[in-house]
Image 1 (cartoon, one colour):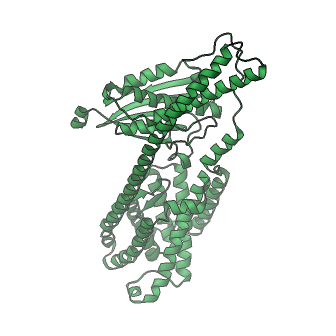
Image 2: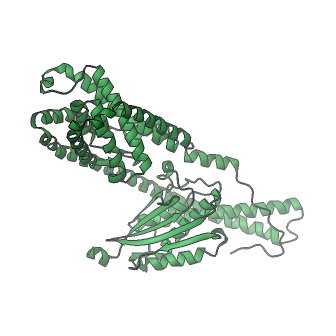
Length: 501
């Protein structure tokens, strides 16, 4: 390795971050989230929901209707189990819309208000395992949605559903009007809070989560199924509602398969794109490394030979060349690491690899004041993998965590690394106490060249992604349970473990 001799003049301090690079990083991350506006929207929706609930409070004290109310809440909660994430994973859809429509048309707005909204809130927290804040917002926005749909239903001539209504085509007008209002108010309020929370445009969030063809067809199918549910209830009573859970389950499974297919297709496209970039990066990195080696050697010769540089200006220029060559060498190393494809597998103890990586980095200055926590599986999981490459993944994740906490000025810096054997899969996670990764860019952090660091080259996480995928595993960025960022790695266990599982 070439180093500057002890007699050389001191190198100048590194230049400050380039403002253009900082601005580019901000642009890559998207517009900043508008959290005050999001909280304002949540507050406004809850105030409107409180007003609607207060005006309909008499339903709660009508004990003659208590049994019917509990019945509809139970049916709606049962339908809420048929939920699925949207295509982006940032919102959810539910097959309960059919039951919600039926409750509105049969029981009226005031009673449907106290059926649909509480069921949606309970399902959000207990069934979907979302945060209590999302549960409260879901309660409020469903109340607003039911009030809006009920209002348009009543003012277009709709009333309590009767069997005779199905012989009159005119009843389709209030039915269709209420359905359109329900769909756009419901999805619009969800998209609005997601957009404000993540700093995205409302129309874009709506289009990505609800405006694609498959979701629109699913919504239309649920909407058209609702009058049949009403007819069945009027003819057969409560038993008639249960007949529709099977077709709703079929629609839910079909929608889920479509989402999984789209995500797999995107994963394939991303993998192929990264493979093409890897081939290009290998060629570029190889050529750059050859040229930089010559330039760096010449610059170092000038610095070490007193006769080679005769002025302070030339000495400064030579030092600048040497520094920039070092920067470019770091970039070429990222290119070469990204393009490296060979995986030399051998039997490895995953916990031992984790301990070695932590022992290696913990004495470095970057990890000063970092509290290390290890939660390793006592069963000592084993895997057939390239230990050197997995250590590289861990080092990259550790460095990113330390840099994120340092840049954010976090007082309590903590990095947690853990392992678990889950059947035939080994889970390995790295968590930190930093500011976390904005949800809007979590899918992009593994792309080559994508970085939010002013001096980053954008290959660290791309290398991690390539290595884990080459081992037949997966890596995902998310939010740690206690805040901060989490990177979850899943690797296949050894063949004997997979057979036992």
